[in-house]
Length: 266
Image (cartoon, rainbow, N blue to C red; front, top):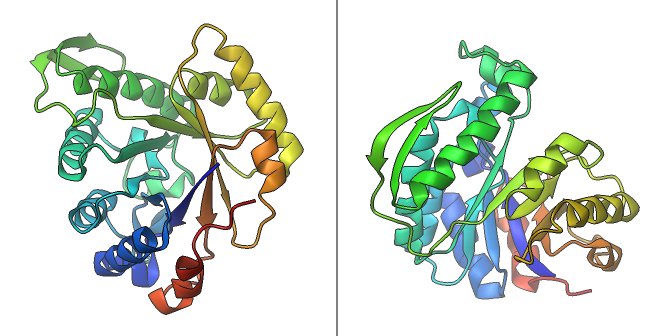
């Protein structure tokens, strides 16, 4: 199992300078990843929130080893060609240290209060098509795509990422087959509202069955609070632990102890 931090870029961490301090401290303490939230005014409540791409770019500029990414980007709320450009740029800036977390997006209000359609089926269709568009553009080859939601008219998208691929981890509820099928087509899975290690074991077995056609590496990243007994989750199939802090933990001082202690290896 590998060890990272999931940072809710809200409240004080809406200031990207605070996230940069966390990234530096995390790398120094031996953490392997920093993944940040991607929300607009936190479900439209008006709570301060940071742009993830600007934040991650700043973190990339002051680190050299730690993986960086989103947990997760609601791709139906973004244009996939913009996301592809952001991922390629961040990959070059960081030397390829990028993971792309993607999902439907959480609460409907975060779409509706900006005048966007929050229908779950529509978002699911946009997510599936959007992921295909992002993957095609990141190859650097010419892309011709005319789908239900997106068009790419003979564009070669450059520059390419620093590495051949950007790993895509897809979020979803572990008990539902459609999110698992979607995740199995990509490089990793974020279980949402994971209840216990047994549920994770069932999820991992389902994904393994869906991926019988490939031997490519696959990640399952679980977001759990500090102090969790990780051994059962590692046994159940988790490959990453992303330490998840409560929103009230809003200052670097409150995180410093966990950062300083480093990952708790089971």
